Length: 428
Image (cartoon, rainbow, N blue to C red; front, side, top):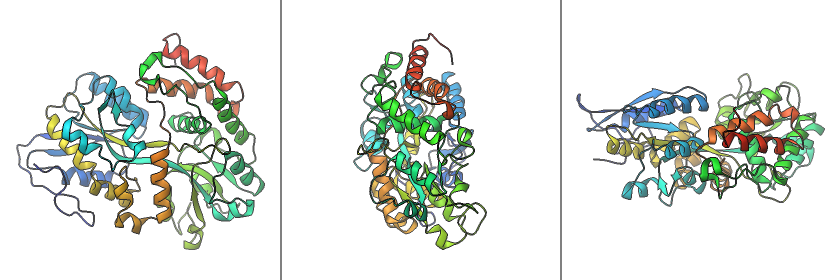
């Protein structure tokens, strides 16, 4: 039985295997990103032994978790494959809802080609519990003309303070994700880790409710200071408290103003490339070439930033009637050819270094951007690897939102509330 794709699909070598009428069907629950390519993968990773059928999850990561958790908590045998946000892998693995990859299969999932940041998201209790499919990270997107006007040397690390001041002093803005949702925690976590701290002590995080809460720290105060500075700055965008991944995109190429600095995920490059000459995008190719990119800003000058880590991992349901087929399918939809297609066609970047080095990606993206992506994934910072991450995230959101209210006392207040939540002494 083939574990790799055997025939060429389009220009990326995706496999196609014949099928029969009485084969088992493997249900693959996917998030909405990259549906066209994912449907191709489902078709072309189907074999003579099984057919993969796509089932669409809601758009929100939180809603995706809820739907899958309800199914698995009920022992649903029809949940064979699932696309998981990495932050939910520990919860699902701890609940024994995922079928671990063992032996040679584990070696195929996590060989030396997988970037460190992506590899860490699929490990739990010394087991490989999912397969990295694509890896997401955030970088600093900006108008080169704005940075030049501010006198910033973007070949060197820049701090949040520098970025905010540069935008405020030069008719620009700073775009972030600060609505009351998961991406705001992504920003908070990256700021704290960039200052040398963590929301939860990494050494105790797998202890679940007994994990040590460390958000009330000098690093937490440094993170709060950055958020407060932007909130009080002329660089703050008008929808600051409700901003998300999409809202600040239009501020990069405004009809008036100098544009923006924006922290956002890897989809941004292909998004603007596809909008050349269209509303919300660069007016022409020359304007598109004014789009710059650099490593995620430093929280504290001289301390290496910790870019956020995201993406999608493929888990196999522990109650699947066909776990061996499902794990073979998971390896197929996460192999190098599959990751190449997702990156080139959908802007969803690889978790494997060899794919970044491939000719197909070098033709689709600037070489320096590929290097930035892979280095950011390899050296970035994960959110707390906790089986109770959903509660952790909600607790942080409840005390750090609205961002306009964040101040020196926010880390202490959030630490007290988070501790109470984990101990079962408070409700969200």
